[in-house]
Length: 349
Image (cartoon, rainbow, N blue to C red; front, top):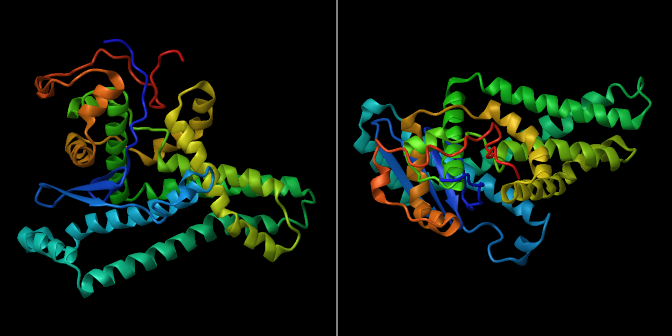
């Protein structure tokens, strides 16, 4: 089998507590490894806050709604995965399953959980704005009496913003639960990389694939930091209060621009895109870890619940998958060229 370029599949996802969420078009699946070792998969529909609107076809505007959708869907998925671990395993898995089923049926508890989730999302978003957007400016403003160059101050503010972001990622990676979350993050990436490289979705093929991907949310957040540096360098106001408000008001613009960069990266593999994507790929070394096979099994379950990868391989790469290839003792296409650290084939472009 010759070397193959990675091809965009359209699926994406995120890691959740002891599991993975995968989304394909209007469907998403959350697969969770329950305390008893079984894999539970829930499939739901999510059309988005601007479903059917023409704004979703407008560059830079659509990214704002995609960002909001990712926050909502991410919180839903995390809440679902956490529901399996609200009680100790020895309290009975049947009771736990009944509790999850009960929450699906609505009622006061379901509404309370949704309200709490909304509050947590708003508070988390407000804290993120304060820490990553406002705090760097406030720290930099302390040096205005000593540094007269507004351009130099803008550069210092941007560097400080990126430094705070990196330190935040490093600090939370020290937590045991976050390290496991990063392993599932790696499993999610490996599944998508495996499919988009044209390999059948088996545990062995996934384990061989890259744990880094250009469409990762980590890359998106880093682009948010980098784009903000450029915008705040050129867009300035004199009043300190207006400066703070400007940084908050430009967040949708920054998100829209960052989304377009990530979108381009996911659909192209030319040299310029690889250069632009490189910082985010390096950053993913902090937010992804190598998963074990049990984690990969969970990620595969999430993919297969919403995505027909066999049909995709036939359409994108032109071959049908023989089920005999999927035996554990087979390693189809193991002879393919290995991928570099950026999750991109080492072939010439």
